[in-house]
Amino acid sequence: MDERLITVTGYGTIHVVPDITRIELSLVSLHDTYDAAYAQAKADVDRLQNIMKAVELSTDIPKTMNLDIEKKTRSEYDKNDHYKGKIFLGFELNHKIKIDLGMDTVLLNNVIKLIGKKIKQAEIKIGYTVKNPRASQLILLERAVKDAMDKATIMAQACGCALGPVKKINSSFSELHELREVHVRDIHDADEAMSCSPTSLDITPDDLTLSDDVEVVWYLADAPSHD
Image (cartoon, rainbow, N blue to C red):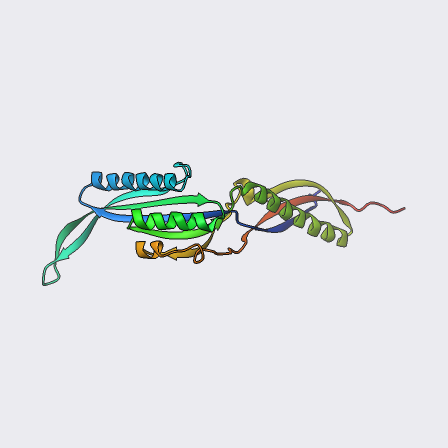
């Protein structure tokens, strides 16, 4: 006899109030040699550590997200548009760093101003995230499973059956989804960074939203007798 099964997809959504201000720095520069590009990356990290000391924070707070050094060239053509070869332009350093702070606009302003003063090439993005996303992610998973169970119970009852044991759960939560940060502000150059004030950076971010689904398969059982 074929198995009697019911498959239902449950959905969960959660809104989380941010508790972390995230500064993301994009540091791009061109150098004659690979070693010079790498030395620039190290110098930028040293400057950031000095900035952390200046605002009395740990020097471990700045974290490298990506460091890439790429040889850059451009194609050269003669006056008849015939290809002649490649011209070496230099080694491009692309260094991305994040700095996570609390929800403190005065501290944020002080750090942004110092970055504008000490690291002139920095492009700055300001966003918000949460320090510990796992608790929220587990609540989301619970909500998605409960949603599936509520719907499956109603469907089974409408068919004159009852839910039996769970056969399997198909979930994208095998690796819990990351709460994405809310990006709210771009600071494009050093002059803009140094002109910031606590008032101009006093931003109330929107809640972070995380949603996903889970598929649950149940065995169907006979409905209980009311005799």
